[in-house]
Image (cartoon, rainbow, N blue to C red; front, side, top):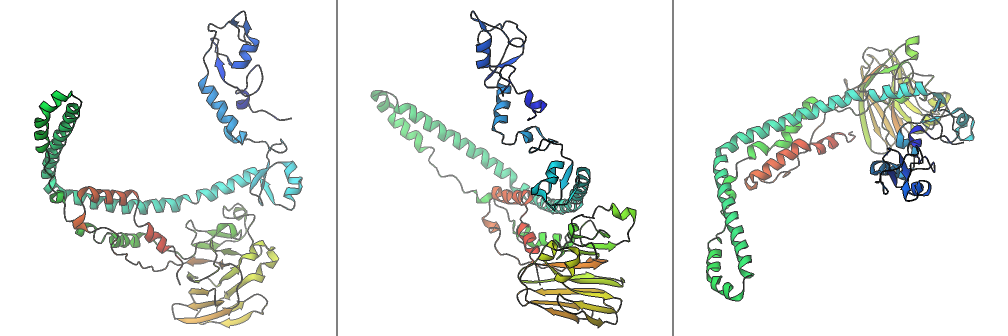
Length: 475
């Protein structure tokens, strides 16, 4: 038996019990389908309300337009529940939604949990799933706030440039205003002549011919060409000539590019990630750890404290550096995408990594015995270079320019950066290629065009192409 929500009942006619069709409102304030009213409420040319029985003061009551619009919108909505908002009952089994399917990422009822569709799926409570996802979404706020500050900083710089241009413009502003007034008067004169000629051509032939000579003389007086507006131009090359480079110089001071950001959904439960997802640490099991917001019930690592990068690579050359500091135990490497679908016991079969315990290290690769290595002094920074096409994963110590180890393998699937213990991903130095002639020559720009460009830059920052350039993976 289907349940009707309270809002849906309010859209039903009290006579036919269906969604209103052309509802009319009676003097008693009740609304009835127009067809239902005339079927049940007509007695000797009088209309009576079928709800309260009162006689209508009008034989042709008006349409309730607001109610009709709502009913029509409701009828067009394919998902009636979404029309009124959240519904706590399963649309399939009409049971309360009490669980959240971690596999399908959707709320389910107890009957759904036992159905074939959700066989072998993982579940948690609605409250737990909602709490974790709210915290995950809230973690995105701080990076967005930082990005907002970056944009506001560049916008303020452009605003300052605009104000500087305005100061220079004041030197010619008065002359331009005078010219605008003179041109406006010319426009009025020409408009009056055009209107007069149109009226003259509609006169009778005799009147028209008498006034013809005068009309021609009037047209001659307004045929002068307008003066060139070159006097309004100002020299803006010093303001906008190197605008792109100026923006880049400002951005370089406030923006750091990290070649890898971490994916908190893959982090082991004992790892805690920084807000910008570029560093992480390890903490031992405790009751507090069990409730850590970065602990994801579906992560692939339950036996080892690892975490993956958020983006994978299936082509090209890529490079990233990490700082291990004084931590005695750490690992850096890459992992195949298929490991995400394997059981925790099988995760070691898809990882190429260098794992160190102080000065003693091991190079581990799938289907190969670990190779022992010794480094003195122990490296504090590790650089990993991946060349997907040649199948080379090279690890080195950038401080001393020494090679640590090189893996060789023919990769056939996407690789993700893989880390463990306590590490910090380091930002990389970036450069920019200046694109020539982005703006038109200053001496050919009018004041209106100039302000249009600067305003557009403020509202739609032109350094968008710079950001896209920074986001490209670099070797």
